Image (cartoon, rainbow, N blue to C red; front, top):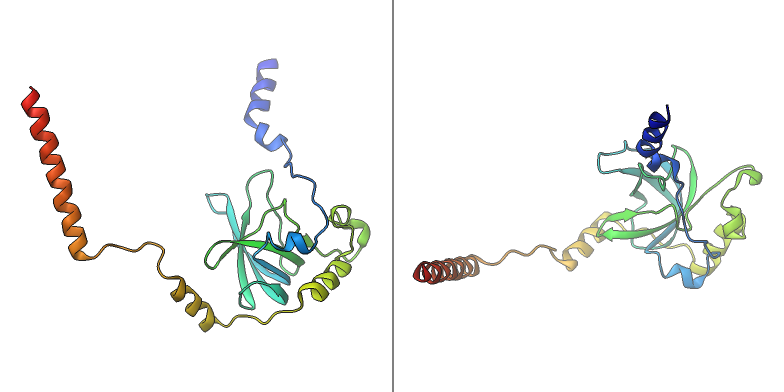
Length: 196
């Protein structure tokens, strides 16, 4: 019986440990700098958890406070570890997110993102935020202002200006690289063959 209990504990130990986040300071002008995109929005839909432990939530932004994004965005989040987030269709959120790379936005449970609760006694984020949801929304609106959405054409232009991330060498450069590689391999073969 003891062996079975120990086996059970070892097998499910990942589930038993809770997510540990550093204590958060209330949102301020300084903490704005750590986030690329800040907005108030509603969850349109939520994708399935993929094998890599990541899921995607689709949002319609109601008020954009920071970041070059369109009105409709998708956000990747952890859906499998003890630090997973939970989104449901129709939920309102204040989202503090970062770009993983161009056009891929991610969110972390240990950041300042918070869900709206109609009953403030259910608001688990109130302790860290020191502001109600509405007070924080007003703080964002007065501090950062409401920004314009980026149009899809502008996003494409930004992407083109950034250029490709994986530039390939020209045909001539590939030829020279191949020739140098063969020369080095032939030299190594010749030297090792001569020693024998």
